[in-house]
Image 1 (tube, protein in one colour):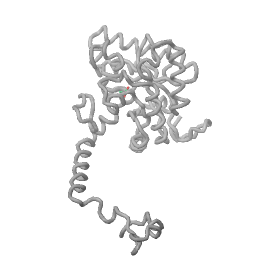
Image 2: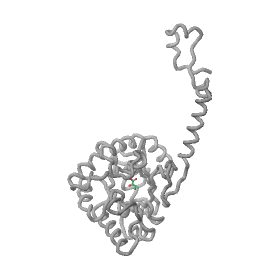
Image 3: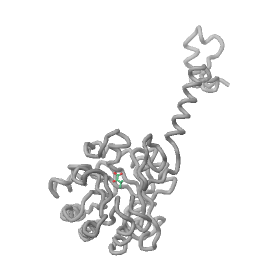
Image 4: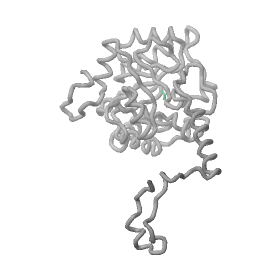
Length: 298
Ligand code: KIV
């Protein structure tokens, strides 16, 4: 199915699970970024993102946390709704936060449903491999598309001893491969491969029948995902080596605010074109002025 084909479900020009699968089959790379609000969703989509992930990374880049662990489902759904309002075309994925899917498959299904019913998402993503297969099966069985996530799984940061590259030796590489296979066999429509060596990601991509989306996993995946704050250079801190910053919005933002602050302090802002005037005599007769509010001074 192509992105241009209208859907019988009224999804219009929307990129769907089927579109992504077809893209991978045609060896057309899938472009995915995270998004956390309506304005960014509009900008990222206009820039050509096929899929937008409302990632729990928002805990770190929006909320200023050290890990994604404290992010709640209600917070995720709030951001999902905002993203959906700014989006017309992209496939939208809600990231299931820590403890919203690990307790039981039933609990996971109920929470996954909230992303579609309340957050207007088209799919959910959850972290984990073999141990999550039954949960993925249950959610997919209820008609909710699931994107898997294996390799470096940030919600297991304490178990991994930090945000560390996974699959470095032969045994660990085999574990990551088996995790990816389990996720695909359980019915996931795609899988994120995070923080693994490029040759391992290439091997997994070759062996799976579903698209792989890489982050810190080399160039041989079917698609790539980056945290939008990283790709736009919105972070004040140093970004990991696998990130390419395509802009320097943080630095440019600081410069813009400095210019604003200087203008305010020097009395240059607001200028006449940013101010509203009053007709002659209105200053002493407020009822005349109220009729003219909104008229800029020219
Ligand atoms: O939360 C997130 O942003 C993610 C991506 C890094 C894949 O899970």
